Image (cartoon, rainbow, N blue to C red; front, side, top):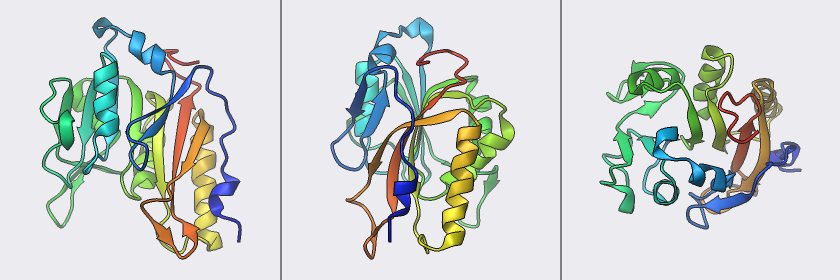
Length: 223
């Protein structure tokens, strides 16, 4: 059977240089327009949100080393950001998950929506949003699309997780509807990369990385 990812191919060209940032295996991201981000001054107030960091901060570390951006990282599964990024004054860590609604779950873990954390941090726009949240990206992004007419970020780095019964039609159609909704909110995929290292289910690859540009970008950063 043809892998489901073959039906979801990048259909848009980044109008700038494309470059992989972070380590070579799981954790790195294909970025559009790094020279644009590198040219931004502190007065430009570049903001990066990283939802889900776990034990790898190679992408976050390279972003703060190469730009004047402030990185805001969120993950309730760890107590601090890993590696050399820990303690850097340009990275700010928050111990909670990002999901579809604000709540405290049965394990006492705090969940917040993107809209809530942006309000708490006083942000109106995110220059790069990275999401790697182990399957809850569907709830989190659907909430964003419910809460914002124009999604408040210029670029999205997203890992999509399909862990169970991924070949069944109902799950394929769920992904189709999710994908169509992303495109309906002006996101255009310019790169993809199958994650062949972390997870397999039989012969089916269960994870794939996607990079998107928001063509309705209010800052006009990339388009």
